[in-house]
Amino acid sequence: MPKHASSGQYAIVGLGVVAGPQAEHSERMVASEAARRAIADAGLMPKDIDGAIDLRRTGGGGDRANYVDAYSRLLGLNNCFYFVVGRGGALAGLGIATALSFLDRGIANYVCIMGAVTDWSQAQESRKAGHRGMAHPEKAGYWGKALGDLRAVSHHSWMAARHMAVYGTTSRQLGAISVAQRAWACKNPEAKMYGRPITIEDHQNSQLVAEPYRLLDISLVSDGGIAFILTTAERAKSSPKPPVYVLGQGFGEVSSDLWWDKKNFTHMAVPRAKAQAFGQANLTLADVDCVQFYDCFTAEVLFQLEDYGFCNKGEGGAFVESGAIGPGGSIPVNTSGGLLSCYHLGDLTGMAEAIRQLRGEAGERQVKDCDVVMTTGHGGELVSPGMCSIHTCTLLGRHP
Image (cartoon, rainbow, N blue to C red; front, side):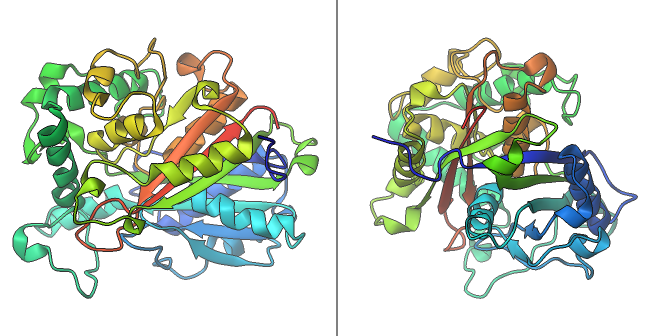
């Protein structure tokens, strides 16, 4: 099957990362700094950027920035458009798909795609007021609170529990995912959990939050921002850094299937997204050198390993327990530490790591001969409380 005409015709040429607590900086400042770093990394000037996208995540859809004066104006970008894209943890994938249409039509030459959060700092302020966690606006029609669904861990825990009931997956096997990703984080000085290795026993002894999820099954709350610059492959030839090419993209919605058989509790909307992305790139799973899965909780990593075909359905527990996804394993997964152990910026966490791996900039955690990386995103529940609805798959490559 030949490649799609668009495969390899667009490339990422700049990356900007702001990581770690940002208590002294507003979200607007973090956003602007991430974008500034990406533009400089691409060897460009603000006047060269003629498109700007702001990535936002909420359950069910992207929201507006909660401040006035967007990063595009603060930096003096020469942009002909600025707007918000995003849904749940599906940020970078949707941002790329949107930017491609502007590049393809010649409306823009360089698009800056940026996402920033100050979730950790907000949580600290919430704690001072006697509350826990981040404040979220409640949507009309939300019915779960009276039944105890107060946070994402509540309704995501249903998925892990169902997988355990159907396939015999154990808490220790979920813990193997935490341990593997923490091992990667300990090779990444930028990771929040750098220098803090854990064992299965540490996982088993961590606090039970919402059965079967323990504290070490749950992703971090973070501050930070990530931005990257997308352009055509032709323009990318003049970039000072190695271009990272967009080889294929695919999207799926779990809501397209019938829900009453509860298949959506143990599967994600992978098949259509996988077929589209790999079909466009004319690649197979064997061509993928490392994977950056969206990992808000440990079980989502397990589901994706099975649904993509790295192992059979129901065999993910044994697969991760074997050490397959950690350093030295057969398929490196979330080599930055992921959302579980690096930082939580939606699928931008995996996107930044994919770019670094393909550029050869990942330091101690660098995957040898890394030519193709798969990144995913999901979330954006259409029914709340509900399961991870949207699923995005993006294939990036070192060569077009």
